[in-house]
Length: 243
Image (cartoon, rainbow, N blue to C red; front, side):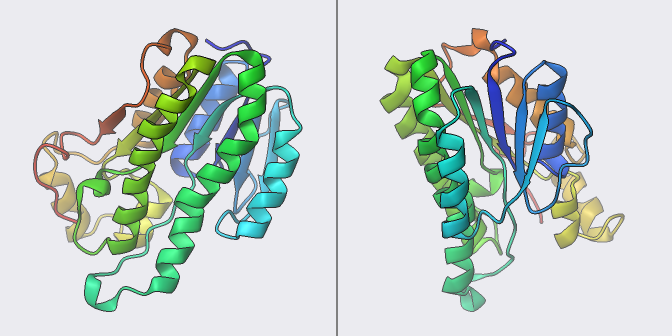
């Protein structure tokens, strides 16, 4: 793995997938900066928790200024995200702007902030959490578009940064049993059961399914894998999905 001296910046680290990522990185000895709308609930001496709204460009820029002066960042996991359900006929550009800032703008701004430290180390790992919805999903106009943008970022940055020893990959989760998922789909509802039944492996994913994929990508020995998108979706990317 990357040296324990390499710190990790994890967005959306207070709940769900991000929380499990933070927990696993701490267990591997990495200092972690968690950035989310709420404090990270983990009590650990290597954890710094920051409450930041990454959908606000000026707020993200201030955070980036602080991150850019650190020399120890070697991992960046951009996991922060939110679903705004909307079909084309009722999609609002204001919501698209919000998700663009959160999913894409924050990735760019914070990616720029961690780049000097990674280049100085000659080693870095960037993981962008996209979504299976990037392939298309009814009612996800804003979400699908902005999550699909992360796939393009990963491929482009992988080409730009490979010579610096920095890999960039994306993970596209299917339906994962998290607070964000249950904010849209009621737990135990007929809709939730139908979604699980439509997934080839016949279950919803868990946060740990995604966090284990993150662990693979950030490992030192994963240096020959870059510019890739890993669909951790129970087969939903090659089958059908009802949500």
